Length: 113
Image 1: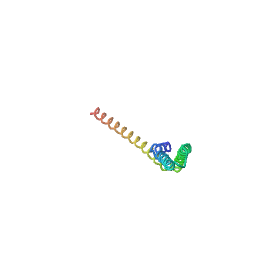
Image 2 (image 1 turned 60 degrees about the vertical axis):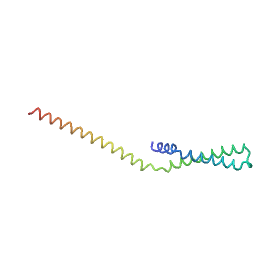
Image 3 (image 1 turned 120 degrees about the vertical axis):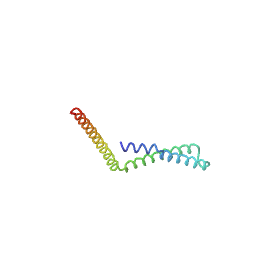
Image 4 (image 1 turned 90 degrees about the horizontal axis):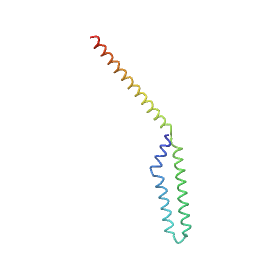
């Protein structure tokens, strides 16, 4: 769950799309500047090839980021938050019980007098 959310945040940030778009446009500019050296067919294949290679590299970078992502700190934080929520729920339940007991005592005092 944590890794999925982290990887989804990285993907949604647009860093990899920007990387691929930059490479695509750099390749297009390269072929436009060197137009006398390449045929249109070579240009199209070169642009597609470079874009596919950059997409592969970005996927490898994402997998490396995920594999190097330390889950131990995140797991400890989630455990702490879970335990904190349980403790808060127990304290709230104790407060409710104390209020109910105090109300019962006040009702008994009113009946006795």
